[in-house]
Length: 550
Image 1 (tube, rainbow, N blue to C red):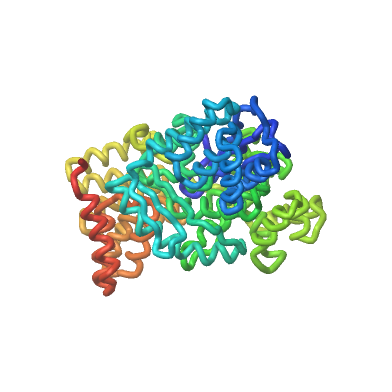
Image 2: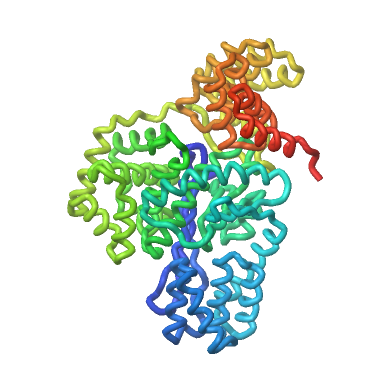
């Protein structure tokens, strides 16, 4: 993975579609989000006719803004007046693609190609065909409030539905209030079983996705999310769903005018708002990037971030930039004494540039704002990165045990972990704990991999207090390392600390919900807390995951 690790996963930005030759040189912003690595892809230049009628221009602009309510009557008029016009066929295909009717999109794009529409029609035909084939058998679930349509592959991915619905129900009132905007049509969320499928239905190749760690995108008026079951340890997938929802809200409210650096700052800052008690907070790894940049005077300028973070010179520069834009939103909120997201996006929707919008919110000329913000950063006391454990996403089918051990950078420690693993296979738990303890003497007690293995061995020995103590040590540095939460939750359950156990096991679900043992443990916690309905949900999930694959 050539992208930096931040917050337990990678975030990427994809892509600007330049529709060359079209009236007003409209750019369609297709924002991806899983935080780091920006990718920009351009569609093939227009070779055929441009929109020539007022309705074609209006439809084109509405589709560029993902405004289907505005586009729908215009598309109807175009089809009534000239149903075989190549441009009308292309625009109608785009409408159906954005509306999620992929079969109709394929039909119209095919007709557009045969009618001599420009090369963009062929590009869209391939895309629509791929997404139709990949999703035609998907299980679709409309949330109780009617605001979301969740699509998953039949089978074990169905366990994602209740957790997604619950998170979205919490996120909706908070995010729509913060941004002062409510999308007027149901929002589609498509979970794909593997990154291979994400590659098939997006302009990204599978190699690019695996290398960059891109696991979700907000494109074509929908949220496109890789199932956490395609990663060895999962990832913080519910934060990611909220992150992508924010991108969609921003795109629609702004009519696609917000540049990527502010898109990512807003999405990252507010992605935790689906959690009842969470507040936006710069995570420890991001703090380390900023501390280094401040010490070396290597902060990334806002000018260098625009129009795309893809042009930054290195992965570390990109990581630093994402940390910076998170703090920009926090700084603007602090100056204003309130959330400024709604006003910031509204100003750009009204035609202001990003610099002018930020200046208006901060009540400072942009150059002075930038200097003031840098002064604010220097006052925060950011701590240098302390983590010695290489953090990266491990994809199933690509990474193996050797890749996991390779994240331990000290040879002697790695050797003791390997020996401990051999003892673990033989269920010699005391010997395994001894080897893992030796590894700790080399890497310290903040390695999530070593502490996780040690904690599990202690669990199996019935040393629950010791297990909990060892597992708690690395969590401050690695709050999204799922193994720590699973084993710590189980240790706390054994100790009768039900509320604490619940918190850690629920966190584990938000990272990797495909471990049946987690659902079993959480069901026990809920039973003892008198939460029968929640216990029933966990037992259904456990049963589904325990069934043999077809």
